Image (cartoon, rainbow, N blue to C red; front, side, top):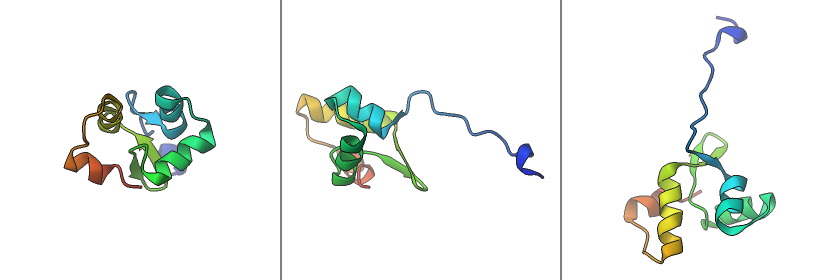
Length: 80
């Protein structure tokens, strides 16, 4: 199987990049968004070196912005 024969990875339509989530929820720059993810302010899921903000992470952000405490599962998932 050559490199051209590899199946294409589908982009998850509801997932956001870290900079897109930082901009959407807090108006942060690219570097500010990655710094917030590193601190744990933006919950992310890690796939290898890739950081993505999945719908589950987005719900955790929205709950945090509404003032609700994070759930245990989301607290663990939000670590970088």
